[in-house]
Amino acid sequence: MKPLAVGLLGCGDVSDIYFRNCARFDAVEVVACASLHLEKARARAKEYEIPRACTIGELLRAPEVEAILNLTSPRVHAELSLAALQNGKHVYTEKPLAMSLSDGNRLVEEARRRGLRLGSAPETFLGARLQACRKAIDSGLIGEPVGASAFVVSPGHEWHHPNPAFFYKEGAGPVLDMGPYYLTALVALLGPVRRVSGFSRTTFPQRTIQTPPLKGQRVDVDVATHVAGTLEFASGAIATMVASFDVWDSELPRIEVYGTEGTLCIPDRDPIQGPNVFGGSVLVRTRERSRWRGIPRPKGLEEWDSLPVGIAFSENSRGLGLADMSYAIANKRPHRANDRLAFHVLEIALALLEAAERGGTKEISSTCERPEPLPEDFPARE
Image 1 (cartoon, rainbow, N blue to C red):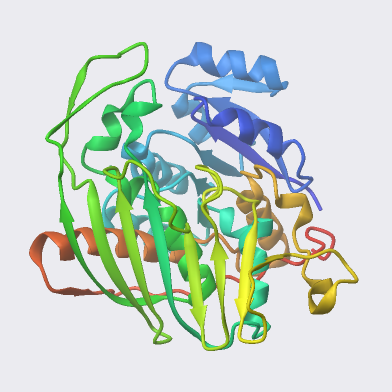
Image 2: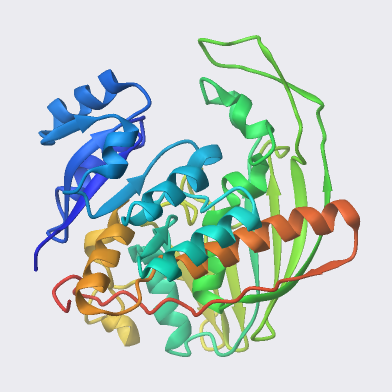
């Protein structure tokens, strides 16, 4: 198949992994790049041998560009994605899809109206770890899912990030920053959410930056920094989620899924080993076995000899969702990291915050399908 001609928009730090990974996928080819600062785009184009560096407006209008990969700041995701769609381009954007439901809905409707594809990160649910969890659930290993827990907790970004102010402003906070990775994983494993409830607090009105070059500067906190919520899924499963920048340390698992016959666990063995990465360990404990054991297991060992999945996607595989979207366009099938999933996750996150602020429960009006599992030999079966 002819690769999808992609224009990469936003040449910041995260662009490096996308430039590298897009070169790995036969389904996509970055033919141009743009940034707010043209010199940065030119430097990236030279480094990664991209044919053209240009301004944002030029990229959006470029006739050779079929799709825009939007890696800009979250506050302008919706604006620039909409402009790309209006210029007849497919769009794949970093998370979140938008900052508000109204903007997200406008994007979804514009894509539908124009017959264009709209996709969004996070695509980590397509990685080896969460695909192993998906296969375990679908195979009935833990029985019928009853509930789940998700814990995204840390002492805050001021301890490691050089410029953490954004994380404490509207549109961020623990629920909208790291939360989408966890919520997307839960929806991919358990299906859509029906309603939520929550409580929240803002523990510190100011944060002091602990890392250079802004060490010692204070940041005003405008968002809830400790949020505890409950999610009721359409399937009847019930999940607990804690998202916090107020936790010094924890040994809680990142995610657990509880079934009638057993439990799946994504353990907290490393600070970055949550559903925000593609690989990592998974533990399972069932009615028949009293000890935790790891999956996937090597071939020839017990009943899990067929579990190794997505081995090629256990490393950082950002761009995998875009590649899948390209194959989906060619083969006229739904893509997995799609706009309905992204919009549903955005609504869940915003509903958690609203329920916490106003009290009571909040119904979720949107829904989505569980994305199809990634074939074990992807992209060979495309």
